[in-house]
Image 1 (cartoon, rainbow, N blue to C red):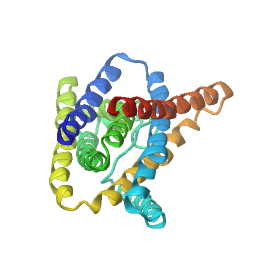
Image 2 (image 1 turned 90 degrees about the vertical axis):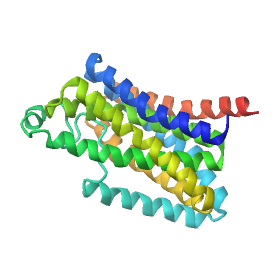
Image 3 (image 1 turned 45 degrees about the horizontal axis):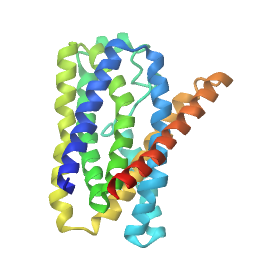
Length: 263
């Protein structure tokens, strides 16, 4: 397949498939399953960022100091954006302001304001994900596939929480699914716009790869890991470590499979 074809397929998969999977979880799965998925997503995000995206960004730029400084600046920027409620990346059921169970009554009486906020934040977030997926594919098809898979892994637990918030905000299941699917199309829009723009400004690719790494690290460390500390018992900790390792292992395995497929 051409690079553009890969970008379109993986952008649609990253958006629509994660929303559909989240809907299935929200309707049928137990809440405990979400916490398991979160641990796995942490491993996938950290594995992709440190083992794939960041090394490619450093190689593409040829300047490790500048690339790592961009990652640091990106993490700070994502923190500020989240504080300004322009970037809502809450993936855990116990996250403040996003807890689908404990805060259900509050959300049920907000006349849909929380749901609207979630949709706006998700649309922006999906658009940026599309840009980052394209940047990865334009550097290397194999890197693009690994990056997209890591983003899908963390999208599912996020979408589960967001889907439940929409339900508690007064949206019907059908409307919540429809609005989430519509929001997911922003991934494809961002990817296609980036494909046109980055084709003319190839020098921007290393910077976007560094920001992609920053995004993955920030989501894993700031949004996901704190939720795991709410279950400090030994059994839960061992389970979390094993699932994080499984997430990292998936990235390593995917790298080898894609390498063999590409070769």
